Amino acid sequence: MAPRRIDARELPAGSALARRLAQIEKVARAVTLEHDGTPVEARAGEPVALSLAAAGRLTLARSPKYHRPRGAACLRGDCDGCLVRAGDQPGVMACRLAADSGMKLTSQNAFPTAGFDVFAVTDWFFPKHLDHHRLMVDFGDAVNRTMQVFARRMAGSGTLPELPTGVVPHRTRDVDVLVVGAGRAGLAAVETLAREGLSALLVDEEPAPGGAQRDRVDLAPERPTVSVDAMFDATAAATYANETLVVQHGAITRVTCRARLFATGTRDVIPAFARNDLPGVVTARAFARALTWGVLLGERVVIVGPAATGARVNEVLRALGVKTVYAPDGEVVEAHGATAVRKVTVREKGATAEHRCDVLVCADEPVPAYELAGQAGAGLAWDHDRRCFAPRSDDEGATERDGVYVAGTVRRRMSDEQRSDDGVRVARRIARDLRGSR
Ligand code: FES
Image (cartoon, rainbow, N blue to C red; front, side):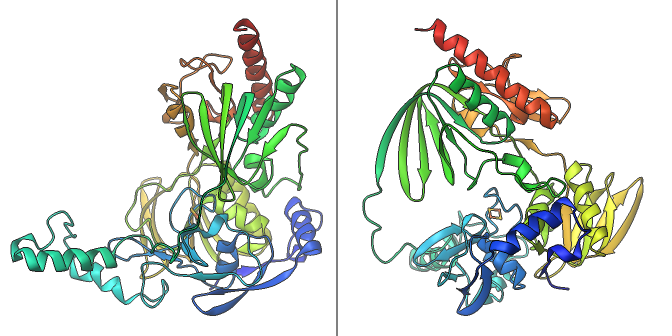
């Protein structure tokens, strides 16, 4: 069965998700966009990847080499399953693009479309894989050169726009503290920094504050107020030598500061198993995010993994009357399907079983989003609780690099309340350190 839209009346009255959907329905404005020449009905402002999913368009891209089908797996800019050409801009993440009327989206690196790509034969022709480093080298220079041109046309991620986009606008900002991440820890930190008399700039790549709370199907909608200077829909793309590059709506801001605080939280993962790249294989948070926008990604759902998001999603699906298999202690062995997941093999408690499905929800424990902190010079240490690496910090979030701090779940597992407390604690430490360095 295909994905579909759900409305508040299908859910238990007064439930958190019903209230969220009722709020969306109240302000929803219908728009029409175009995907590969076909009109698609959407709601203004929702992620385009969800507009397309709700219209049954799950295969949005093709892998660069073998042209295998790809779909939106994370809905938060962490995978490359949703890359499309938007207007003449290649490589745009459809999960980060807000739907608007008249948008023209096209598949990249596929012919005629990502849904049906004749170049997918590449995958059949090279069952033992394609060695692109030595492709055709034994056939002589002329053939080799032709093949390189052919390989370049076949592979990659879209083509450049016809015309240069012009000079990228650029400005600079200087603040005492740059805080990346507007979840509970980051929000608590900027409030505390302001009380301590320090100037702070808050940056987050989501369009609104709230962090992981925004994807919680069990929490009523809330929009925390931010009383400090903030940039949303803005990506801290790189950080080096006290300068951080922030990209927002195609413009660049170079932020210099005395201290950098990374409250970047965690990201969901899709574990390693055979065919884990099929459209319809999604993270638990992606599935939950789709629900909060009123999109049900499938009617036969298998949820595997111990993360709390999986249990919450399962509860909502039961309330909607959707058939689920929930295996919190399970492990996916293999996903099956030609262009989208249709069946999964799951091992649980020593037994292996196959389940038919149209969505596989991977509810593994999220891992710390430590990349920026690492780039800024924080060392990493093994987190035994979560069985992954996390930035090394002392009790107050200071890392081994002067002026670099971490707060919230990027540094360890924390409850909602602990995140806020941690933001306050780390901000006070920063204030103390900065006063001492004057
Ligand atoms: S990057 Fe868009 S769905 Fe993962």
